Length: 331
Image (cartoon, rainbow, N blue to C red; front, side, top):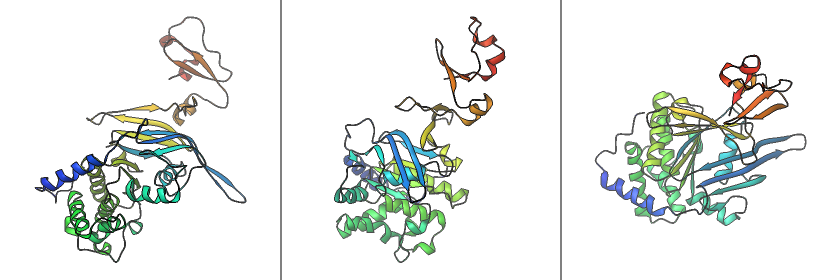
């Protein structure tokens, strides 16, 4: 993807930003910077109950850049709302940078949203104030964090440069392209050096070139500003360029794809802490798996068989089995 290019030659300022980001990090004393354990979110009205999250497990280590994918209604945006402090889970455990999201009081939650997490919405109108310039938009979160005015303007200018939109500093949102608006939004979200940057479909309303520029900005926030990035996306250009893609289905983590630096990836089914896993839909259909299934303990794997099928017990090598062999799935 295309990297922002308007900050070339400003190595000193960039190095200072990186140093400040590293200095702001502190150990969490937990198994990850983001930890979700059996996370449940239920929305209730008088007539209906919707289970948006149904026991989701997720661990994200500091410094990762992770993509969340899944069908509409799978729970992706609900998860981001909880991690951002905008919503509360119904049950389970959720911790971010040492903050217990279920136990935070009003004052801690406000400080958490100002300093620990940054958020980028899909709609640019939710990210930027239309009557402020790009520079003023980026400086505004620092004002609430009581950063001195001169320092606010200097850092805002640096962030716009790092993210490739220094030329936009004196323009208002209506004078910017969609990609420029979202890159300025990333600068706003990282203004107070958050440890976690959350983005909900930040490229969803952009063309390919605009999407590439926004993802390049997210990658810079991860690599140069020290933010751990969690991005919800339907864009394969984004999900295929991160080292780890997590798929959510029916409110639970179903699969993860891990990629090498050369882009090659391998997909894994996720076994949660309760011992549950979701088989990929293509396997469920291919092998006719419905309702009850039979498990067999093999020397090097677990066999999953449709109900009513008798697994061969004749010592025949796996490779030469017929009849039920085409319905057999290894894990």
